[in-house]
Length: 334
Image 1 (tube, rainbow, N blue to C red):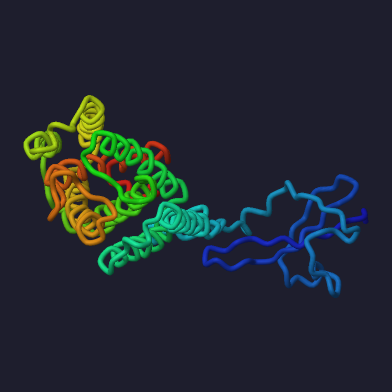
Image 2 (cartoon, rainbow, N blue to C red):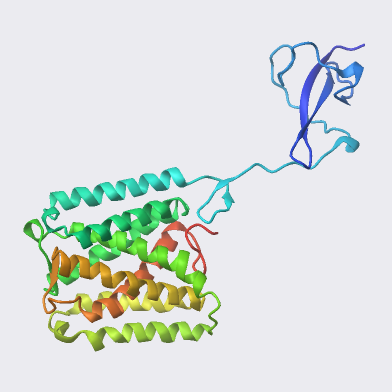
């Protein structure tokens, strides 16, 4: 009888269990013979527990087991993703790291630019709540969408804050008028609005039905409210201001045509819900920043038009950077 090497192989059953078999591989080219475990002639030598041959060399078996012994393979168990389902990779560790860096940078910037003396109870409560939302969302987002959202919000809001400060429409009261802290607060506010829209409101409004042209009507109404509510700020609204919001409005119209009405309505509503208390806590309660012509309440043009247009632009840019679709994509669904 020709010399043989014996391998213990495992075949997956439909119920997830593994069935062990022993395969004898001829060394002189004879045909492979596979037998079930339990056959007296195919039991492994005492103490044999490894997949490799007695010589400790690894070999692959290209010959399949007989058809009568074949069983369907059991798919590998994927990891948890942001929507409670299982994906190929678990992004939670990287997401939490991104949020930890965001929180650290925000606190350091507040200290470096001298904003800690402005902290009041409502202001601190708003910031801490946004920290909690960001941590919770980190456990539900794809690892690509969350960093993209942070980056997208920062880019958009840094440009907006620079335009507004230079135009004299609002002013920050940190060291030398620095406003990086305000931009990072906007990142937290944008994440909170995004979370409210995609995780709460869209589920409540999912039964709303409207044709796609209704999306454009809603966006045009939001954009039209900007010049209608600008009031005393017309004098500071220069070329950069109008160019920025014209671009944001055009992006909003394009994006709105690609999503369902409930999602668009959710993004607009979340901007109004998050925007008013955020601006009030920062500008009225703590006076970390103030508006030139409003001392008792944030300006209506900012809340009614700017916040919704910017939240929608943040949503679109983060989806683009993460390579994820629009529509009902809520942070990782591909």
